[in-house]
Each structure stands twice: as C-alpha cells, then as structure tokens.
Image 1 (cartoon, rainbow, N blue to C red):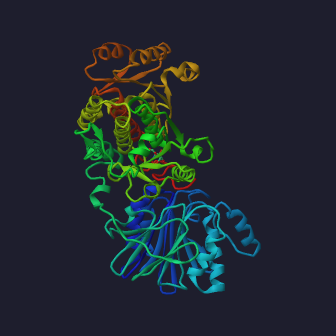
Image 2 (cartoon, rainbow, N blue to C red):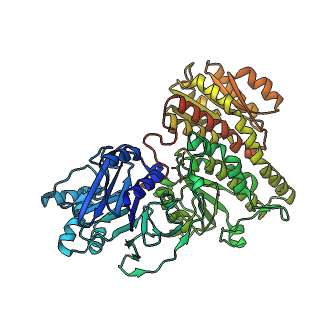
Image 3 (cartoon, protein in one colour):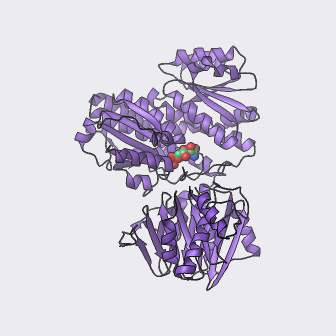
Length: 614
Ligand code: AGP
C-alpha cells in the first residue's frame, strides 16, 4: 500500500510531486523517489526513509522537468533501502515505473529476464515491470502499446505509472486491484493513488476501474478498457477543502482526530434521525424496504479496527433488530466458502474504502448474489463505488494510521442501522424514540469524556515502561477491549491482548504479574458484577488494575475504586452506546504511552493507513 502521484503540465513537476507524496505518506513511509523528464533526459532521485529525507536530498540534487512520477513506499518485497525505493528503471534509462500492489508471478518473470541477460538492481517485484516494458519498447517504440502488452503478463495487483524519454509528453497508468485516480486540471493533469494527494491542485477527478489503462498529457487524458477500447468517463467533483487534512493546532493527526470525535458524530447523525417515525433514515442504501425486511441475516466483514466496530454491530443488531449476525475477518471470509442463504445482506465496514481484503470479501458476496452495503468514510473509494449501497460516515479525513474517530463513527452508524432495521421489525416506536434521544446526546457525552485527557496522561506516565498490557471487557465491552489493545499495540509497540474478561481464567490469567497492568472496562451495566469478579481474580494475583467506570455510579465509585489502582470515570450512557464513550480513554492512553516512549504516533513502524495489498 504505497502512494503514487504523477504530473504533466507547464509547471516544474518536482514540488508538486513532493507535496503530493507528503499527503500520501500515511499509505507507506519506508522510502520515496521521483523520476522526471526534460525532453529525452530522465532524472531519477530516490531515498530510503521519509518524504522529508527525499526532499532534503532534492535540495542538493533537484529533479528538473515538467513531467514526472513519484512514489512513497510500504515495503512488500525487499528492505527499505535506496536501491529498493521506487521508481524502478528498465533498459538503459528508457523506462521508469512506480507501482502500488504485488506482482505474484514476479519471480518467474525475473528468472526469464535474467536468463535473457537482464541485470537486476533491487529485490522488488516492481523492477520486473520496468524491464519488461523496456523490452517491449525496443520492439514497438510505443509506450502505451508496450505497457498494454506487459500488463497481460502480470499476475497480482497494481496501480502503476510509467514514463519514458521515448514519449516524454505522457504518463501511462494502469489499475488492477490498487486504487488510481486521474486529476483533471487546466492545461495540466495528474495521476494519484487517492484524491488526497490532489488537494490544492484540482477537485476534478476520474476514478480508474480495474483493468483500465490511461494515458495523460498536459492537455488531455484517455482511458482504455481491457480490450484497449477507448471508454468515456464522467469527471467527478470532490468537495474536500484543505483544512480538513491538516493537523491544525494539534501536535499529531491522531490527537486532532480524537478531539474531533464530537463533531464527527454530529456529522454522522445529521439528517438521519427521524422523529416522525422514530427511526433512522439513510439516503444511499439502494435496497427496497422489501429487500431490507426480507433480510434474515447480516454478515459484517472488515479488517482491524473496522472489524472491532463490526463486533459491536453484532450486539447492536441482535439486541435492537433481533437479527442473527456473523462478523467475519475479510481476509478469512474471502477464501472461506460458508453456505449463506439468499436472504443475507453483506455489510463491508471500512474507513478507507480501499482495504484489499474487505474489497475482495465484498466482491465475493456480490458474486454469490447477496445485496451488499458499505459503511465507509472515503467518498468515491472503490468499496463505496462497488457496493450496491451504503452509508458514509462523514467523519472527515482520518490521516493518523491508528483509527480513532472512524471507529466511534462506525459504531454510531451501526447503532443507527440497528434502529433502522429494528423499526422495520420488532422495535416499538417508543423504543425508537429512546434510541434517538440517546444518540442525540452522544456527541456531548464524548465532549465530556475527552476531559479525562490529563488523568489518562498521568496514568500513562506511570505505566508507559511496561512490556505487556491486558484489556478485559464483557458483552459490548469485549470488542472495546480488543480495540484498546490494538491501539496500544500499533502505536506504542507494547504487546497487548484484549479478552472477554471471563476467558482469562481459561489460560491468559497466567500472564498476570506485577509488571503487567490490566485495563478493565467496568461501566454501569448488565454484566457489571460479572466483570468485577474477573477483576477480583486478577487483583488476587497482584496484577495492577486500571478500570474504566461510569460517572455517577455509586457502586463503581466505592467498589471499583476500592479494588483498582486507577479508575478513569467516563460519562454514563446506555449500555449499547458505551463502546463509543469507553474507547475515548483507551485511545488517549495509547496516544500518551506512545508519546512517552518516543514513538511516531501518526506513522507507526511497519504500518500504513490503507492496506491495498493482500
Ligand atoms: C487501525 O487503527 C488500523 N489502521 C487498521 O487496523 C485498520 O483499521 C484496518 O487496516 C482497516 O482499515 P479500513 O477501515 O480502512 O478498511
């Protein structure tokens, strides 16, 4: 899941490419590079490390030219070195290629090329593409035709951009599995992995579909389908202003996005709660009430944090819509072949809308004829476009790799969907009215919850040196325990596990010792006593305990406070909305612990924001 951006026009390409790479850096930050053309001359500059390292390098050795392609990398094949950085060159400087994806048959192709005497410089799969195109170019002297022919030899996924001094007026792009979008300008055009790279350049875009190839010049662009037939496409407008994706006054995107949650939830709720019918309303489901009423089962499929939101969704739909739900890891679901009856709706949950496994799981369900919906944050993303219908979160850009506001927006949207499906079934009008009241009060409850920041920071100072942490919850709190553990793992690199609290005594309790803090989610609710027994079991083994409890809950104030080493109080909300409130202190804990350990909070090692490879 790398980031690609290309430019052709009257302006110097380098500054446009570097700014675009900065905006795409959340997709991968192992190395970066550019290749520009001045007529028949190619200028290649690439560096291991961040875009900032490349930018420093370019200060001493600029890359001139008004045509260029560039790349920021998340390594799939070969370590993060200067040599493995993209662009990769084919022939004697005749072709430069940047690629996002995985070429599965690269080793076979590489062997054939080596047998033909081709010399390789990197360990990447991508370099194979450069050499193949260079060979075809020798034969055809036509860059577009050469790329087209080489695509037929590749197995795997790609979003790629190619330039050559032989055709210095153009950039050729192609997409299969990895996102690619054309940015349409005035006498200039762009190519990018996603529209965020084009903020400040143009808001007019064309999304490439799988198996499409495009040719962009300064004055025009053409798109061809698999049979190399020209296809006409609609140019779309993106309503995204630059303010959204900046850090504002915050030190990190993650902290900004944590504190943006009240507004993000207000955006998710806006115009979707209908007092007249005491239900929720969604304009983009594109399914008839008949299809929705006849649905007998839901499959929620996703990855990572979105999967955890799906687990909360399971509790919500079972309780408020009385519907059986299965929550599936998309990466497993796409290759499993479960018998699914026809009255099943498949819902893909995804912040980016580009996660390869979730896209494949959605396509698998469509192939089997199930209506598909997407709960997604990125407008115009592949999953949003391919699902039959869906719901946008309207949470605004989420740049920090660790997902925060998308999670609470996903849970809130799932609660509204449970209300919607419930009101089509068994949920009474009064119950609907109560849920609407609860949901409307949620953004302010989150504002209140954010006030625990200083308290959480103090607790982080106490525990940021540990090597392991356990997170425990029951019922609606179980997915939150998983999410809390994931947040801590992914940005502080502390080994953390989330468990259904009662599961501890079946093994994991052996991990408990005085060096391993346990986070217990003990808000007011139906299983409070049960989870407190589990807390006592850990207490008995002298494990340090941090509890998350409900404000104004006398029993918590007494009992929990008497047992736990630290208690973080959060606003008291109905049990089914507690996942939104209790995840706030867990997000802040991960943030402060990571900061105290000197970790890069927004760009944690080995990760990327949008996982577009399998
Ligand atoms: C969460 O903090 C991670 N960034 C990751 O687990 C993420 O949730 C997962 O990759 C799914 O991404 P998506 O929601 O964009 O599909």
